[in-house]
Length: 313
Image (cartoon, rainbow, N blue to C red; front, side, top):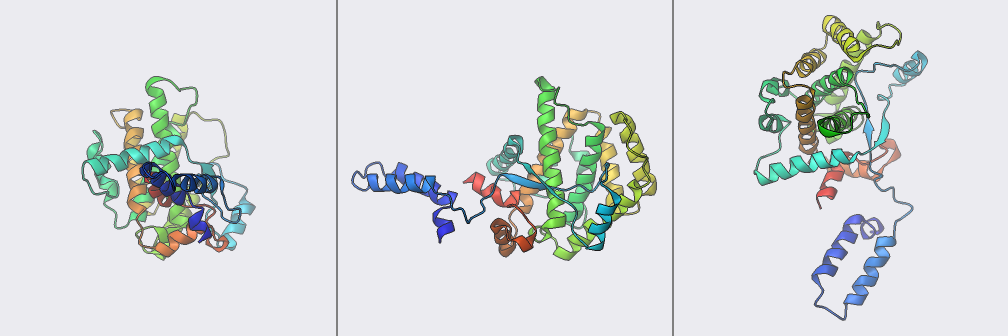
């Protein structure tokens, strides 16, 4: 009861009631007083969403010490995750997709609708034909990581079209790593069967780790050279179908005739639709436990898909 009373939604409801009740003079002071108290109230025992999201990656190009990975493997721990602040462009991109789908009365899909809307997306529809959502997420996540290797983020390009390209890049890479985080840490929030999603992620990650283990020690490389080495290595030695499809999709993105800006714009729209598509999970208990930040859930914050309805409200 305390969490509901002190929730953001209760505060919004009181403010709306306050605005709609301007004709009522006598109870107005009481409503204003209660609203002001609740707006200042924040339960210390409740762990509110701190606007951070988890980030994981299948392609670890700069691995940690071997002993650390060995301990995680022996203890069968999930892949390491890190928390980052949700960039404003991620929210804007998600809102744009939600608004477009609502105005056009289009049903959210696993990314195919955004590809149809994109001027360059038709040739990428093949990568959405996998049997499960988790496989599609991992395929596009690998491809996004490969494109990021070829075109890394450059803070010095913050004007004109380069700034727009960087914004799309930030949105796509953050949502891509967040979806990979969902597959490994919160698969129960995805449409697929939990254990299948976990086993798929582990199999793809193990294959990628095996292939990348033979890479030479870190040395300064240009983005183009690092991209060529990575694609060649993964193309020749990868065995898992999802990893192969991710490499194929990544090469297609890099070689897009319309250029880098078009590729990142398409990816930003795809990932924003994907996160909205997986958000309405029927697993209410899983969502509630993720929001409650239970320690045994190993989820330190509410999934972005859970937070989006609050943004919409």
